[in-house]
Every structure is written in C-alpha cells, then in structure tokens.
Image (cartoon, rainbow, N blue to C red; front, side, top):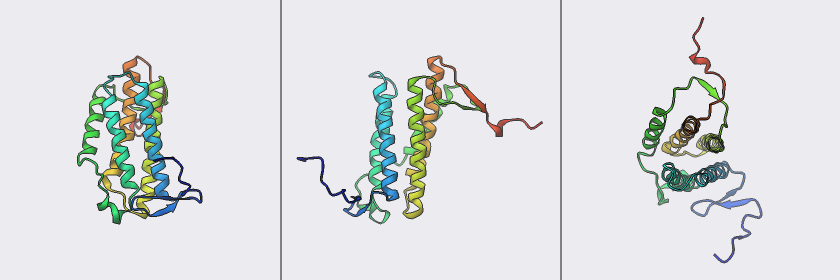
Length: 190
C-alpha cells in the first residue's frame, strides 16, 4: 500500500466484507467501531503489564479473537460462509473456565464495586465497559441481520472476565475494593 488514504470514504460511505458499501452511520460500522475500541483497550492492558505476566497470552488471544469477530461482523449473514475467518467452537466455554479460575482466587462479592483502585484495575474496567457497549451494539445489529450466537455470548463473557480481572487485580495488589452498596437481590428481607 503506497498510501493510507483512499478518499473512498469522503462521502460518508465505507466498504464491508464482500465489497458492499454502507453508510458510516450503519449499525454494523458502529458495532465494529466499538469492537475496535475494545481491542485498543485490551492492547493498552497488555502494554501496561510487565513482559511475561501471566495475562499476556490470553489478552493477546482476546485481541486476535476480536479481529476475527470484527471480520465476521463486517460480513452480512447471507455472505458469512464466504468469510474464511472463524472462532473456536469452545471460545465461550474457554472464557468461562478462565472466569471460574480467577473467581476461585477472589473473595465472594455481594456489592456493587466502584471502578478504580489501581491504574491496572482502571484499565480493566475500561475494557469491561467497552465490552458491554460492543455487546449492546451487536444486539442492535442482530435486530437487523443475524449475528452468530457465539459472538453475542463471547462479548457477554468478556465483560464478565474483565470484571473479575479487576477484582483479582485489586485483591492481589493489596488494594481495598471500594463498595458502593450491597446487591439488592442479596439483601435479606426483614
């Protein structure tokens, strides 16, 4: 590529997989933009960790998975079979295993927690809220064009993973979690 700019988007249109052009305000483009933001946040997380940190590898895999998700989201459902990219069949269960492992190494939570505590926990919470926003955009897209179920479930699990990672970071760095209030559904009725 000799130059980065093509000028083909100057009128508010962009291409998706298969060469179809859509408006830059299309929900598919909005969903992919949010997935891209999430990928950048995960990259920032990786950059903030020391080389060799135990989370480096699975965060890199999340980034690779997000690139695949973006490719699939950029493909209309009727053309998806022509897209050579795919996610592992067990992507959701593997993410759940990681969540379970980290959860087992944290104290139980019965309260809403204020995001923050350490710079790393703050970055993890940023990834969490971006995963939630990406999930909402994908559900909006799903109303117009079917999004594969494993993508919808994976984004939901990623936000859960980032939540428990932030709790893990705080508890293992010696930083106290700041509690907002107890979960209402866990309060005993008097």
